Image (cartoon, rainbow, N blue to C red; front, side, top):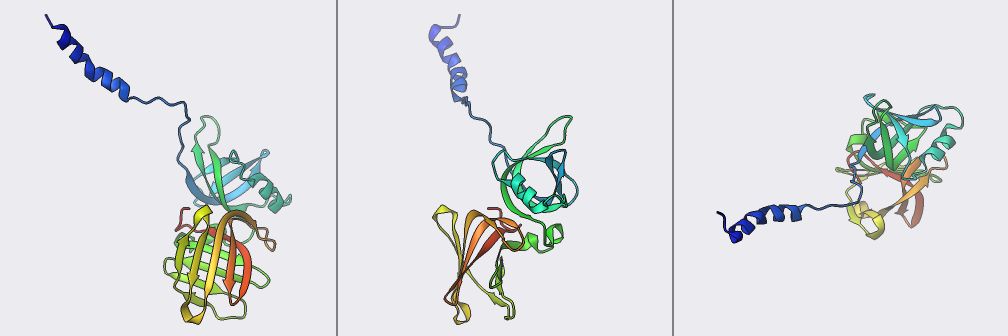
Length: 221
C-alpha cells in the first residue's frame, strides 16, 4: 500500500505541469509579409497580383491605411493597374481567394518602373523632391545625390535613428554638408500622384528641400 505522503508527492509533477500552462484571451499575432505587385479593381474590391505572378490576393484595409481612396484617386476611373509595395498578413480562405490584411503601404504609383525595377532589392532608401528637382538614392555602398543640370555626387554617409521613427542620413565629404531627414508619415508627390510612407527633408547648401521617400527591398522597416 502506498503511503499518503508518497501518493501526494507523485501528483506534484502533474500539478506543476498544469501551472506552467498560460491561457490568454488575446488574439494570436499573425506574422506579416512584404510584397510588391499590381493592383486592379475587381467586383467592387481591390485585387493584388504579385510581381512574380504567383499570388493573387484580395486586399483588406483593416488597418485603415487609406489605400482604397488613394487607388481611386490614382486610377481616376481608368482602372489601369497600379504598382504597390505593401505589407500585411496573409489569410487563407477556403472556397474564396486568399486575402492580404494590410498593415503598411510603402508605395503606390501609376508611373515608374514598378515590378521591372532591377535595383529595388539592393535599395535601402530613395527620396525625391521637386522645384527644384532632386533625388537621393541610398544603398549599402553609399549615397547618391542627383539634380538636374548638375553632376551626380556619390558620397559615404552616417545613419542615425531618432525617437519617433525619424532617421537622419548625413555626410560632410567633399567640403559639403548634406543631411537627409525622413519620418514615417504618408506623403503625396504632387507631380506624379505617387503615395509613399515617408516624408523627406534634404538640407543642402543652406537650402531645405522637401519631398517623399520610401524604403527599398534591402530594408524591412
